[in-house]
Image (cartoon, rainbow, N blue to C red; front, side, top):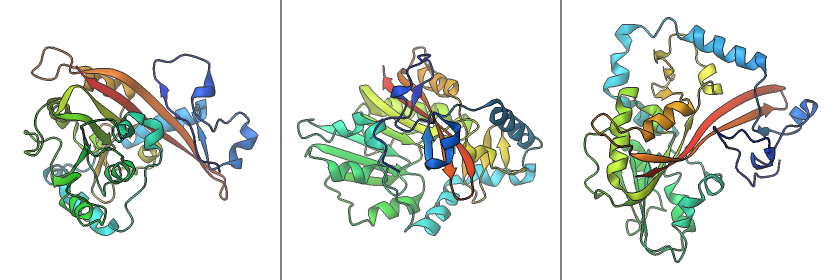
Amino acid sequence: MKQKTSSSVIDVSDISDDTAKFGSRLLKDEESVFSQNAWDHVEWDEEQDQYAHERVKKMNQPPLYDNGLEKYYAQPAEYWNQFYQKNENRFFKDRHWLRIEFPELFQTADANAGSKKVFEVGCGAGNTMFPLLEQSKNPNLFVYAADYSSTAVQVVQNSDNYDTTRSLAFVWDLASSEIPDSIQPGSLDIIVLIFVLSALTPEQWDQAITNMHKMLKPGGMVLFRDYGRHDLAQLRFKEKRLLKENFYIRGDGTRVYFFTSEEVAALFSSSGLHGTEPRFEVEQNAVDRRLIVNRGRKIKMYRVWLQGKFRKL
């Protein structure tokens, strides 16, 4: 299968019939569905839509047993520590799609970009930081990387590619009441937030948005990607894994929420719990629908991801 050369996301407010911009792998003939491993912007038929709603409804009752809930709220980082301890040597993934979906990020690495500061929140094994620095021709680009898993941060710091003259990795929780000591308010150009917000409880989202707003320069941008409602990962959950509506506990103890595009837009464009003015302008609010195909077993798997670009006002 040839490598993708264009974005697959479509703005949720776009009602155009021009499908050429949606991606480079468009399924025009259902008979050809098993000829490739993946297809872009695949609309669900009525059967798939009904199946998704029935699965979610079934999982929504009853919730996970009440006396088992507290541990998943008390120390969520510990479950991620266990995850990275188990997957340390297999977790790094080169996000080759970053340049396609977020060209703004790689513009900071241009030789003439000037002084730029980028913060990868929920850095894991440095999946964004390392590729960005590797391709950078900008001597004045500095990248921060943080995760609330101390094990993940150790993975980054132990990497041969970790260069403290160009980057800094540390433990920090996005939902903390304070921003990191090493980052000054209003100093960042870009915050990368990829599959991170979904790991927080809904009650923590406002603080997370507040922290990002505080760290960014005026006009600075959050680059966001996360799980969408009715994604394959949500539909595969078994019963008794629900923490609260659309918020689940995986088998390894880590948590995940599945958003709608309306929820994401409302979060970033709101004034927050204590503000009066909108904090971000929504520059992109998009959905990425993919059909992943197992050609050998003739299985179709529907993925739904949300993508956004939010500029600090």
